[in-house]
Amino acid sequence: MQEKVVILGAGVAGIGAGYRLDGAAEIYEARERYGGLCDNFTVGGFRFDTAVHLSFAKEKVVRSVFDQTPYFGHKPIAQNYCDGYWAKHPLQNNTFNLPVEEKIRIIKSIMERPAYDKVEDYEQWLIAQFGQYFADRYPKRYTRKYWCCEAADLSVEWITSRMYLPSIDEVLHGAMTDETPNTYYAEEMRYPKVGGYRAFFEHIADKMDIRLSHRVTSIDPNKKIVRFENGNIAGYDRLLSSMPLPEVIAAIENVPEDVVAASQRLYATSVTLVSVGYKQEMELPSLWFYVYNEDIPFARGYSPSMKSPDNVPSGKSSLQFEIYHSRYKPLPQDGDGLTDTVIKSLDEMGISKPNDVEVTDVRTAKYGNVVFYKGMERDRKIVRDYLKEQGITTIGRWGMWAYLWSNQAFMSGYKAALPNTAVDA
Image (cartoon, rainbow, N blue to C red):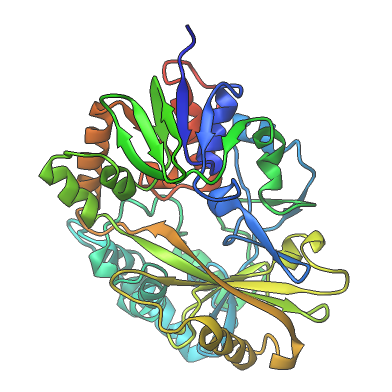
């Protein structure tokens, strides 16, 4: 008799698992559409992804799936905005457009960076790499906007290759000319020509047994049963879950107190998306950009219309902005008030005028990014070890509780679907 596999969550991780199982799994999704954070929505003829998405996957498996969809290849040239100035990303080796006095402070900061016997947190890591002035002036400000906490509250496990560490020669070169090489962690960012980011995997997902509008209410690992809000029940032999770890623990009865406590300490940021469609083609700063000013609510902005003209009506443009908040840093405004603040900020930044705007939209994704507070890895291990003992395999950003890109999330599901089988990634 064939083993029955149930997958909870039809985001990119669940779809990766379903693909590896060649459709021989039941996939249950709480929402009315699959795709999770890789889904999109349309407002007044403008398509917006659910947060920024560009693929730089290198894995053979992911490329074999994604590359079946015609795509645009973009150079990863981003911008930074801080206190009235624009500078190429990454800022630490692209200060050419900044005032001379600021360039001098940054160069001295990096040259005089201290050495630590042991780096205890992200703040110390930043100071060790870039010096006190640069750390205070730029990444620590951005941390409060993106992670919604102080840099000293974060561990360093999540950083990996996400921040570029330039040589002194590169710092000096980037202060004297804007003709600098790409030092981003990817050489090309890919995006579907038609259909938004989810078009990369729609052609495989549409063949799967995905059951929408199935929100989990309880999981019984002993009886191997999942119950849903709509009254349906699913039995399983093997269960894969991309649900957020705290929600999985809350769905199981009689969980040990230490596991419950660990799950409750885990937390993530939420992301509120303010999407803007313009009446005409606009000259926009770059494909995406970072904003350090803390009086401007959004941490990042990006252009769906630059990713693909298919995302907007002919002759028009669009931008979308990410505003992060958490249990420790609430959203400062919502609805029309937040939209008005964003549009005013765009005017102040020289990007657009209020009368350029045709449509706006505000919506929130409850789960944005895992927060790597000090001690998170210990709490995560307690929770995941318990779920493993209960026969529940966790996958994806929220199941693994990790900072996974879409290709990594896809591969987490793909590998977990047949765990004892080799993968030529």
